[in-house]
Length: 51
Figure (cartoon, rainbow, N blue to C red):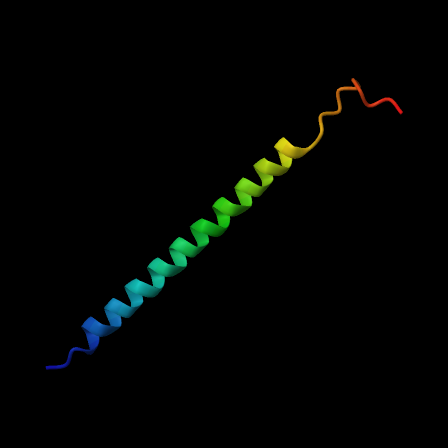
């Protein structure tokens, strides 16, 4: 009896979970940076922008 299917399944699940978590973190980081850029952008209301 070989243990190859169990080992292959364990490695496959580990790699797929790592890819899933990495992708999720990258997408959350991109969304957070976009929100921060929106917050940090100066408001162009016309008040106090005269030169």
